[in-house]
Amino acid sequence: MMLSGRDCRPSAAVSRADLHVHSCHSCVSGNLRFLRSRDCYSSPLDVYRTAKRRGMDIVTITDHDAIDGWRELLDARPDSTDVLPGEEVSCRFPDGGIEVHLGVYGITEALHAELQPLRRNVFDVTARLRESRTFFALNHLLHFYRRQVPLESYLRLLADVPALEVRNGSMLEAHNLLVERLSEQGAGASRAFIATAGSDAHTPRRIGRTWTEAPGATATEFLASLAAGRSRPGGAHGGTAAVAGDIYGVIARYAASLYGRGPRDHRGWHRALCAVLVAASLPAQFLPAAIAAIGKSREGRAAAAAAGAIDALTGPAGRAAPEPGRAGFEQES
Image (cartoon, rainbow, N blue to C red; front, side, top):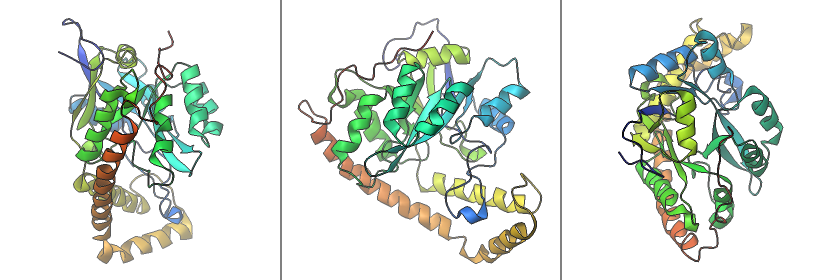
């Protein structure tokens, strides 16, 4: 079997992990904050059970700027060797204020605390991660890019990351294939990027539908293989149905929480008001699907436009090419 980076030994056990999964410990949604809706309502144990049922050998939880998900899972399963600590760190690209998400693996509580005050500048975060030799990947490259800055400037990010999420289960195939091609070409540098993949699931329905394969029977061995570039993406791409399904799933769990089924995020008059608003919105529940469709249409156009621009910028004489070896990665032993 051939994986990206180098050949696997025939005797090496190849495992699968969905490297981009959320739980109920992800932050409150940034949309309509008054409603206090979470980004996800899946318990860490439900995430684990669903991932294992769908053939994932290694399980991680990458909540937004939180580590409580995998900590809760390890508390429930203290002897597990198949749980990989993870986090999706939300940062800002300093020019244009573009949101950037980094999937961080093997993260510790101490490093999590160190990263939080650095998130205003993604380059401060990547510098600390490289200094600590912690493996990380740049997730869904163009998800938040809306031409806030020239693409050439935005692609400076590539010089500071060892890995790219080349298959995200909520992003269109056109976007994922563009990032995968960029990863394999090395963005004009003398190195290719390590490839990761994950479902980006916010409900159980897509957990384990997109995954990363790498040698290793335990989380520690799997992470070492990732850091060595011995990975391969697999599984489903995304689209309108994937995104809309997650939105409706979160809405349903949010509504259930208002009526006592799920986390108690609301009290008194606020709970009653939110319940009234949910009931009043029932005739407009076609809107999430419409919004998802519009968003994916825009994403498709953006991917097509970026493909030509990236070809021009990252060719042999491309000005946006990262410095060879600058983001080289060696896992801390």
